[in-house]
Image (cartoon, rainbow, N blue to C red; front, side):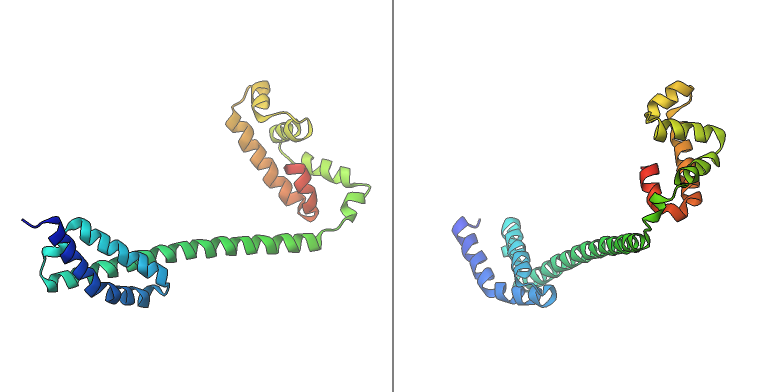
Length: 187
């Protein structure tokens, strides 16, 4: 049976012999020295916890390299996934910014001063199917909550929601030239 001090002595000898080599190996692939250091520290911590110090020198060396390589791979895969996710979010944000910029550049303040703007909106609402129009008017013009509309008309909340979605889609088509109006009308 091995004593704790013998175990510590063996571990220290292994650590001193292999630590710098494992760190150089990890740094080569991870670029960031801090990441490499953390991984190698974790590998040696696992070695200490598993008490692998009794294995032959060849097996120990192979285990250290394999474990370090696998931990580096895991970290690189994780960073790649995070980077791709960040890039996708950034790309989506850039597209949205571009659309907002183009929309604002195309924004024509005259649409709010046109004397017939109210009639344009009324005509657009009139193009909606009867039940759809009724629900839309109750919600957006009268300010009633969808739950209250469902109760008043004795229909399901799902029906109210789907009719509102239909109304919004149709109004977007009819009022596409008046995009800024949609923000006030549909939101």
